[in-house]
Every structure is written in C-alpha cells, then in structure tokens.
Length: 83
Image 1 (tube, rainbow, N blue to C red):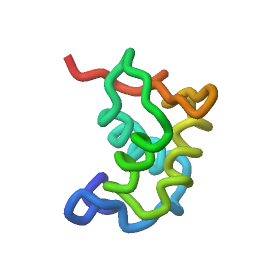
Image 2: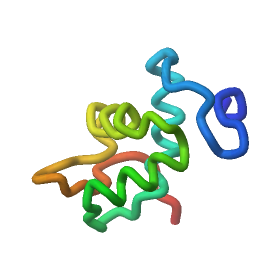
Image 3: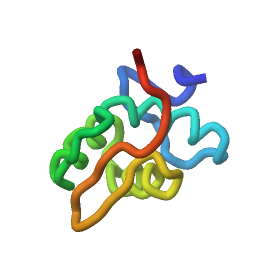
Image 4: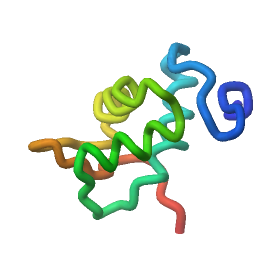
C-alpha cells in the first residue's frame, strides 16, 4: 500500500481516505524518536522530505495523536516502535 503513495520516498499526495492516510502517517512518524523533543523547525525539515505540504502532514500527525505539541515543541506520542 505504501508504494501506491510513495515515489522515491516522497508522497505523491496528502489527500486520501483516512484509513490509508493513517498507514502513511504511522510510517512517517518513525522518523521521530520516542522520548525526544523536537523544535518545530526540525519537524518541518523532517516532514518536508516526504512532501512539500509539511504543515498538513504535521497537522495530520498531531490530529491523529502520533505527535504531540506544546509551545512549538513536538514529541512522538503514538505509532509503532521499532525494537
């Protein structure tokens, strides 16, 4: 399913059904280490690698509970963890 929406590691679109978007968001959130706090500019750089509309990706990640935010600091709050 990921290959349908990713070309060379970048998303081809951010508009898709919620269930498909969740699969992609759970894949994307893995770039953020659990327990690490990230300033907004670092989140922007990481998300821009996936799509130019990094603000939409950031909003989706927060809305789905995969990232949390306070005072422009973000941290991973959900999603799969690689052991």
